[in-house]
Structures are given as structure tokens and as C-alpha cells.
Image (cartoon, rainbow, N blue to C red; front, top):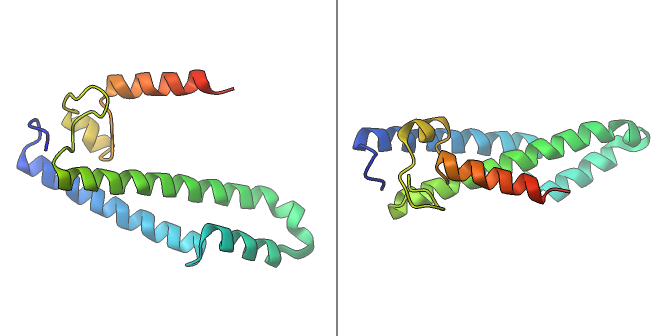
Length: 128
């Protein structure tokens, strides 16, 4: 655990992560109707029938939302694992403590603000 977090702060963040995980799991279950993403996409396509081309934008938005929820859920689970290992709240890039206010805003944060900004700038430069 990061030395900058008190036991109360850690408990608060742990609770927020657990709540967010449950919410994301519920959202994904509702969007996928208990199926895998591929099975759900197949079912939606077969249900669309003749209006499939008109429903394409709707399906693409639903798929993008599901992908976003899945990535966020993966990040939340990874943060919970860091809590269990004891390295939660430490920047993955520079090793400094991630401030509590940042973790409160994004409990699954992997990087401090400076490193997250640099990471995003680098990702933006790699985009075509």
C-alpha cells in the first residue's frame, strides 16, 4: 500500500472499487443478456432481419459501450489486485505515490497525473 494513504482512505477507495465493479458487471450482464459479446452480436444480427442496415449505427454504439465497460471493469479488477498485493497507489511508471485526490476521482488509476499525461500524449502521437 502507498504510504500516503491512511487506513480510512484505503477503505474508502476499496469500497468505491467494489461498488464500481458490481455496477459494471451488472451493466455488462444487461447489455449482453448473459451471453458472450460474439454470441450477443450474432443474436442481434439474426433478430434484425431486413432492417439490419438501418440498425447498424445502433449496434456499433452498443458494442462500443460494451467495450468501454469491459476495459473499465478490467482496470477496476486490476486495481483491486494491486490493493491485495500492496502496491496500490503507486505510479506504475515513476513509482511515486498517486495522490489520494486523484485516486478518489479515478480509483483504478495506474499512473500519477504527470505520467498519465505523458502516456496519453504518447498514445496520441502514435495514432494515425
